[in-house]
Length: 177
Image (cartoon, rainbow, N blue to C red; front, side):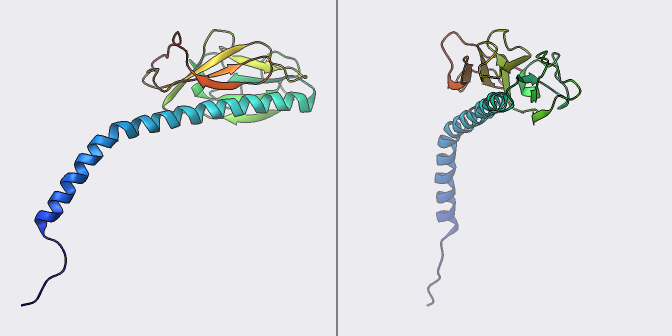
């Protein structure tokens, strides 16, 4: 009699059932990890743009602005939030509008799956950095999942000098899209 190598159909079904149970138990936690990573990535992207604007303002010895932009060529105030995209540009006349001769340094396109809002209305549409690298004002941005849950939300705090990222506070809220 010849001995066969391998496993039976019953053994395969038992292994698949155990694997299915493990996947079902781990999947909800894994979704949380994905949501947290998405929010952290997008808050870091916003912080990098703000740091770029600050560095460019010092380098150019002039005002550099960051504004909401859905077109990638001009600032807009009609977009609900910053997730539509933004521009970093040299703003010589300090009017938060891309004029002829003002160089666009960075174009950030729209971001899916998150909402980015100014916590107050200070940075509802734009903010700028002066020639000495200081911000025009202080406020913060709330970066939230698109469903509006506060669980994984981050806050990008813009101080007079350097922006920083932190977890949201108890009084912060997320808008749902």
